[in-house]
Length: 283
Image 1: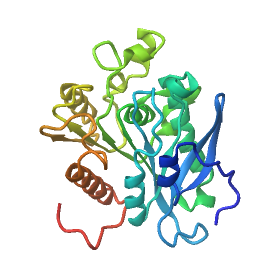
Image 2 (image 1 turned 90 degrees about the vertical axis):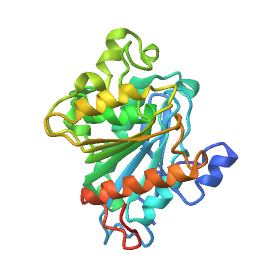
Image 3 (image 1 turned 60 degrees about the horizontal axis):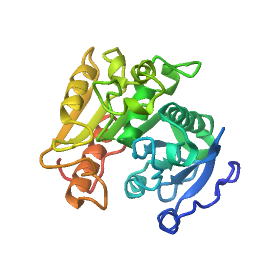
Image 4 (image 1 turned 135 degrees about the vertical axis):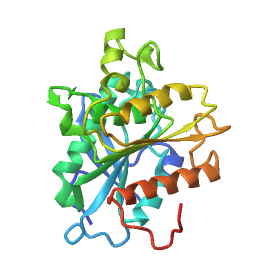
């Protein structure tokens, strides 16, 4: 049992409490709006004193407005059985904290710093920290991977080892999606991942997107993936015909959930972040 970290109290909704009943929750950031929790799922038999595992941070969607920290609990549970320490984090959003994407990005960056700072206590490898996310959460992951600076720190300090992202917000300029959530057009461009690619040595990235996504047009993501892949960066886009914005969720479409989760697993195995699954066949 981990005793050195500050435990977080259960969150309010009964459904969320049930989904997080097997999680260990810790405060990862004392934000200006209050304490923020990370909900951890550890591999079976994980002993921080003996084991060093990869870690996967899941960032929920909601367009920086809704708080949905349990969105990726099924993914967390599955990938924990594959040997990863997984966690879904709470981050500041407009509906609960009157916060926007800039504050949410600070939270996402702090979750990665928290893992690196407490790597030994948690039994994780700080060189194998992965971001996963959906929609606006995917935007936060991409900002950590591409922005030259976050706060007053160089962007390299917040780059994950890899990312797999669902229905990502890739462009927050006026030509993209979500510019109205920023204080100005200048700020929207500053925090748009599309404005910071291509560049060298970006983390490997796997994108999943529905071709009928009405919120984030597939053309934006296709263009972004091509630009990201320049300068010898790795960026693969899996498109899903007939699929909308939430096609990948556990409670939305079982087959798409399983296909995307399996593809993410193979992606991480190929990078050497996860060990091969002895029970899996060829993808």
